[in-house]
Length: 166
Image (tube, rainbow, N blue to C red; front, side, top):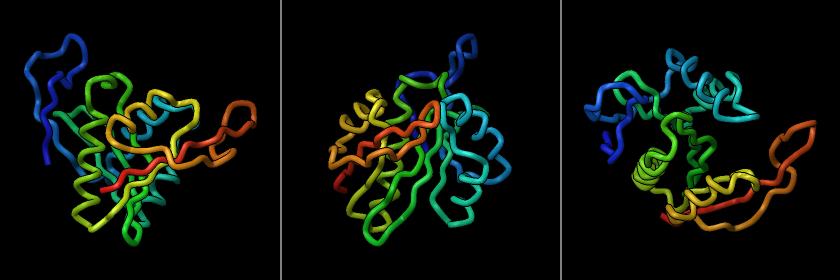
């Protein structure tokens, strides 16, 4: 599957030619690049173990690539008639260019193709930007999970639970 957004996928100063974006399955060979992005994107990033466990469990893990640039990725778990989005990340230098929408569209398409009726996710209560992206994409807030995420100084942060009817 490929997607062509309206903005360039190259870093500042690179060629102005618009590369074709494509999805690739996450493999262990690409895991170091994903971990480097994860470390830059989050205060409490997933670990190598989180990713290898997800891959070993057969979860859907897709990379969004343009040439050799990692634009973003998602990891999702299929349930009986639903998909749970476990991780979605846009590489920091490619944020605010529409790539989150591309990733969410691809996830919804994959989910529908497997007969899912719903997409579910949790997002940090403090991550208002992500919540806005999800709401714009059609997700609705359906609840909260108290003290769900690790936070600074040994504290815990609430999660907002969101769902999207497919």
